[in-house]
Amino acid sequence: MFKVIVLITTLLTGHSLKAAGSLVFGQLGRMNTPFDEGVDNQFLQLNISDKREAGRWGLVYRGSLRYYTGDRGLMVSVPEAYLSRSIGKSEYSLGRKVIDWQESTPFWAMGEISPLKNFSLLEQEREGLFGLHLKRKKNSWAIMLYASGVNIPQINPSFTGKNGAVLGKNEWAYPPPSSVRYRDKDIPIFYTVERPELSEVLLQNSIGAKVDYTVSGNHCSLFGGVKPENSMRLNATGFYEQSDSERAVVMAKPFTNHHYFWGSGCSRSFNSRSFGLFEVSAGIDGVIPKRGVDDSFEFQALKIQPVYQRLTYMTAQGKWSNAYASLSLNSLYLVDGDTINTNIFSQKPRWRQAIGGEFSWAILEGINLFMDYKFDLKTRDMVFISHLSFQISRRFMVGAGIQVLNAPDSNSFWAPFRSNDSFIGQLSYAF
Image (cartoon, rainbow, N blue to C red; front, side, top):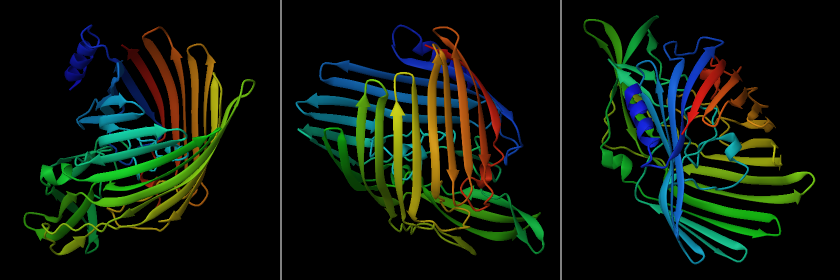
């Protein structure tokens, strides 16, 4: 796979394709032993992006490949890839496009409405929704319509299966348990996956709409729709088997479930030549899952089905920025869905009652600092990341960073990842 990445990089740096991007080598210095002790500490990542305009036509694409140096496989993400056409005050786009539902939610990366890149669960980068996008502006109003018959589910962090075992591709993939307690001893679990038909995954309908109103620095929006959930659900069944050795056989089948989504938000901006740009925003978001049924799956002795839970959360943000630095203060309150669920296949909200901040600073030309802090007042979960980069030349950049997590509540979303504290070093080549 390393040869494939090198080949792609060689092609991209040629004159025939004017794409911008980077090839990154990353090294993780572990402070603790991760939950999955076999994960790798080195990776290569290829990033490409381009934005072209020709008259009323436009083309945008962004993508990343990450390859860990062990045998866990390749991670892929294409946040955006779409073709657009402007006609008067209307813009039509076809493809995978990120929709800015509202301003105060991206910081928390909850991943309920917009899918996430998720090479690392600490990233905030979103992935778009594939379909036909229409945006039209008139005076202070703007309307966005989205419709699709194709579903591209979120795939990261992903897993690989081998000889009945399920392994994550990096430290952010939390595999199901490898054993179960039975008759006062640990019995290994042998996993098999019943893969759905490709059409059952891809051919799914979705529709959504958003209305914006902007006047004199004030902005309000209202949106809603129905679409497939970003991650696939799982039905699972199992039984105890005793042949050459004792084991629990678990069969699982992924399936696509839909949910309704909705939200509203308002923001206000103040621009000062002396002090920079100030923005305050607040909003509410929610998802209501449909109760999916997969009649083709046959349960045996053990029956494990998804838990369907309504989620509603309120967010607020205050942000200041100028040409050299930016600072944001954020808060989140989970209104619906703040319950403890011990189902191994359940989906848990990342944050419940949390505060956080983000800071970036161009210290000197070519030297940049970034810091991000989040703390949950209810679960006491904490995440902190910081990164310092130095531009050596026009094409080469080095960086060093740190990520620290704390999760005292064993039922929280972050509990499986609390041993992922690491120092991070990176060398990047831009083309």
